Image (cartoon, rainbow, N blue to C red; front, side, top):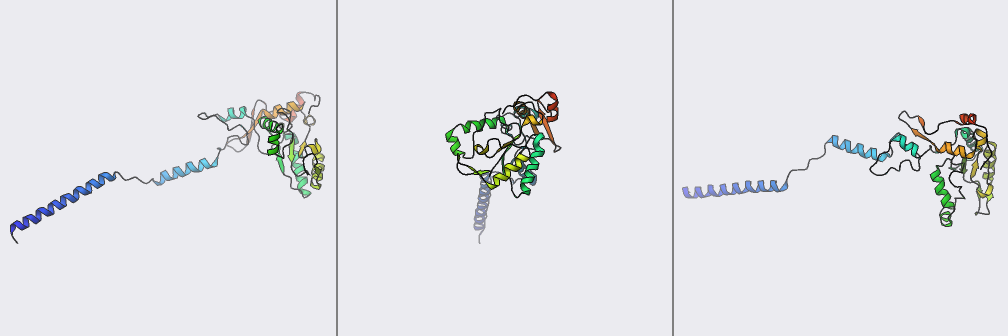
Length: 263
């Protein structure tokens, strides 16, 4: 083989090598930087954020409030301002003056073989207003067959924590309802524990106690005091009352004499 042939082979090899290197560099530039996988710490932070979001309201926020958590977008309301703006109570709240009687009645019903289904206790005035509006609309009543006439806000003993609704007392169509054997037991036990079956078959689920027999001057005063207090959970897990008034029923009884009875 001559020297000219060797030179031509070396030159061809060099051209192929340079061309290959150029192609590799061009491909790397077009691919761009590789995306980095999130580190374990980033994954942990993302998982923590997702877990917190799924928990709902943080501990310390008011619970069971119809309007407590309705904060305008872009604004953060403090816990104290939120509590004062919309009074709220824990689920199943009853006024402390009748809470013991209510618990006794529930225990007596269970002992007699009845599992009471309580459908309503304390209500906010806002909730009462919505029920009152619905009860006056034939279309709304048709959509909610279990709803009877609801009093205007400011006049229902549900707003004071002195009323409770229990299902299964009567059966049959509206206007022709009859007391069930279960209902007779419920009426008897509730009456024995200080809760009147005030409206009978016109509103068979409703039972109520009289605030004036428990230290309040009137129904209106009991409602006002109950609606001006808000129970919230604080970091220690205890309940704290926040609002314009935190007097107990005993303190109320000392503040004035009982007045005239008003429904």
